[in-house]
Image (cartoon, rainbow, N blue to C red; front, side, top):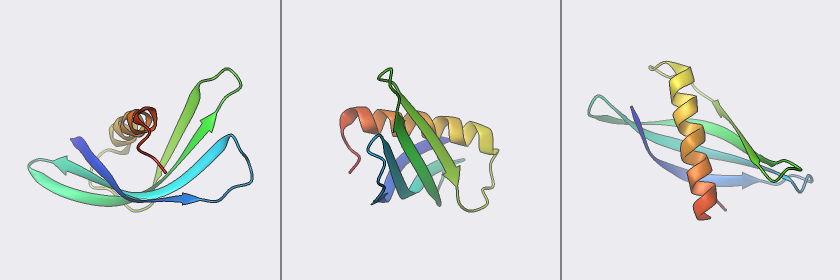
Length: 86
């Protein structure tokens, strides 16, 4: 399983300046097939300077959830470091 991309990224408006909420579609590849699943994720900046990433899958997934969410968090974190999120 490999996360290929996040598409249709929409940032939700929130009044908390250190918390950014998003909706997106996660495109992933599993067994030579490309699939997409809607997700929601939050980036929260801690007082220590670190960023906490939490992700939720909106629909059912035909794959074990924990490894998918772990890989998704790493992908989101890398996108944030590159400045690729709105």
